[in-house]
Image 1 (cartoon, helix red, strand yellow):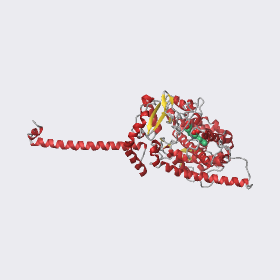
Image 2 (tube, helix red, strand yellow):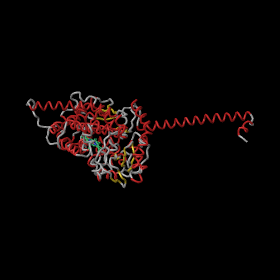
Image 3 (spheres, rainbow, N blue to C red):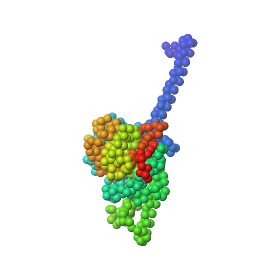
Image 4 (spheres, rainbow, N blue to C red):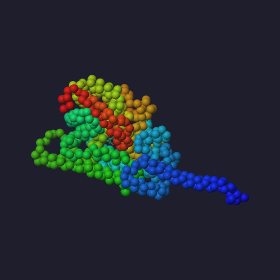
Length: 565
Ligand code: HEM
């Protein structure tokens, strides 16, 4: 008996019931299908937006082009990456499989340091992931950080800079992004011996005192109103470093107008994911316009550097004609310009290299240190007991009818512990700066292919409960016992890195940080604006900053107002 025959025999009300059922079922499945399609679409959009927020037409176009290219490139990808994906055979570190072409990119969240730490819980202290066509390795434990940064330091001493870094440093002619070669060694040696040596830091003490005092009197003028802590620290650092570099602070003249914004943009671009880095065959198109954007910032810096250099060359030639008195002391720019004219190729520099080094010094000094001043002040304002202890210490060491001087700094043990605890919880470069092995090598029994991009996850190490009891608690006391410093020898604590690529700016960075903080806390009482919602979340970037800038209101602490002049 056929089913149609059966149907014919049904009473009319049952027939209409079945008809209604079929219609409803059909519309349900159609709706399901379109819901399913919508869900896939929305999921894709969401995944994309995790690592690539569409904030302009160019980004949207780039994303569309990339989405269309994926299937075409997939075939090439499978062929090309066969050797890498076979993790078992090559024993590369474990890690997630990604999608063809883009690899694991779509699954990464904005806060890379936290995401990598979560992944370490799943895949172990060393894991690998492919982002586009690039093979990345993340090291998350102090033992393995020691292997990479110290035991195999020489092998891991290259950088593999992103395109934005190459653009701003004239092709990695600076110290930060240069590979481990003779040029890097020369530049680093010059930086350490001529700018950052103890003798030089002592010689420039007067500049630091002047600039810190100027900043305190600026804050004094704004008492009772909300001030941006990062801005105060940034301007102070900038004035100190320009004084050291070319002898006059950024206050003189208006060439530094807008510099802070330019620098923030540079730091943002250095940390922004760029499809040209992950899929180099697309780099020619500069789909997200990151390179063009960085070129604009470089033009701005070029104008500053060229005007300062030109001015100095003119002054030098006037001096040679005997028009200007020689004062005997040479600043860094003068030393560099004299080296430029040297015949010996191994130590001579050209103007472009000088500009690249000036860029490093300016950005390294201002951005990291001002970020840290902001983090420390935020932690102090959140922990009133900590603030009271710092004030008691300042009272004992400095007194209330005096101002902070550099000679007081080594005695401020508690403030020093507060700064270190802040560095532990909020390392400004939570993944340090990427390293790149110049040959294939083994770490923890896994093969790390030559040319991989390697991150040391300092954030994970400094939040690891194996290294720190109650790691999320802000407890400066943990740094009061034992010998703690920024030398990168104790691998539990390495906010300035470790090994041959460790930050050479530690002495200046530490001194300035302590001096600015001690002065801000000794001269003023700070409170948060009443309607201000206080929070401590961070935003990952090349320098990881406080998501919401810290604003606080200063009040006079010292009874003698002449101390603010
Ligand atoms: C609070 C202040 C600072 C912090 C937290 C900081 C942090 C760092 C970190 C984490 C690195 C990467 C180390 C690695 O890859 O292992 C670095 C590199 C570097 N820093 Fe700093 N830094 C600071 C201040 C300074 C200052 C004042 C200078 C002065 C010029 C400076 C110049 C450099 C240079 C040139 C490098 C690259 C070194 C190389 O690759 O050989 N930094 N810094």
